[in-house]
Image 1: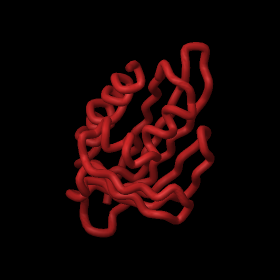
Image 2: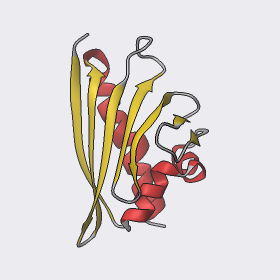
Image 3: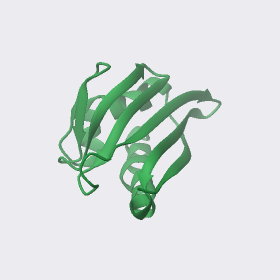
Length: 130
C-alpha cells in the first residue's frame, strides 16, 4: 500500500514537560481532545485515544524529550500501522514540537495531516495558554 510522511513543527508557549504531559497523561489528553483516553506510560504499553479512534503501542518514551509510538486510526485497513515521533526542544518562547508520522496510507494523508492541526495542536495551544 502506498504511504506518505507527515512532518509538522509547532511551537507552544509552555515548558517541554507540560507539552509532553498533554500527550501522555490520559486525563489531560481527554481534556484537550474531548474524547476518552487510555494511555500507558511504559515502553511496550498500549494507548487508545479519541474515543477509540486511534490506538497503538509506545516504542520509546524519554520524558520531556521524545515519544515514539505505533499509531493507527480505526478507519485504516486492518493491521496497518504508522509510526509517530514527537520530539520536544526548548526554544526562547517555550517548546518546539517536531512531529513526524511515517507510513500514513496515501488516501488518508490529507485528513490525518489536518486532523493533527485541528484536533491536537490547536486545542493543546489553547489549553496550555490558560
